[in-house]
Image 1 (cartoon, rainbow, N blue to C red):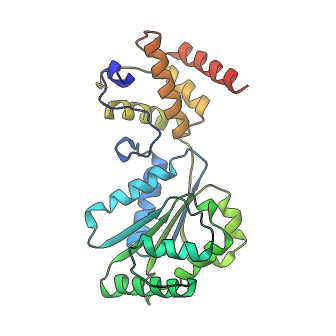
Image 2: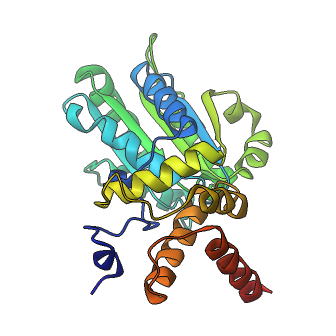
Length: 275
């Protein structure tokens, strides 16, 4: 039997998969999503969201797609999860394939023309907003960054034909600084910071209740949550992983609640494991 069923829960509350159902809209994430949505609707072009590993960038990208889910007639949204390719040719071929562009192109130049024609058709003739989301943006090479810069040049007198949203780790900033022509095109930039104590508590309770926990039930005391916040430094992925391990350990020890002492014991075990 799954451990969460032993707690009378319907789902696993602390999975690290980017499931939008378990997305807790902290102030940081909500602000980021709102700014991205505005930039896309206004067709501003390039948006870059940066954050350390585990701050929730991938989940935000899924939530962004979900925000436009009911407007499929007006938006074409595609996502590249890992922009690691062997060559510029392969990169362009993948971009065209992502948008479902039928082509007989045999060169990078021809793929660029196909993509430009596609953007003109969708953005001008069909009045649609074309959005490309790239996760793990720090993996983009200077060559691919230059390709994207070229695509951002496609525009009408009023708006950009391609809305590009890049989610990356902070080191991507160093790459952009080496290519100022790309850096200058950023219309919306945002840094996702770790959660504060209030949002850490909010995330834990939200996930448990989303998984089916009764609102009157307490599985983590306030002092325990404060220690979890201190230990994880507010990183959502670390919080989820720690709470997941804590619940499993709690069941094994036949306990009913995770308190301050219990968290301290688990922190010591974790420190010893990594020592």
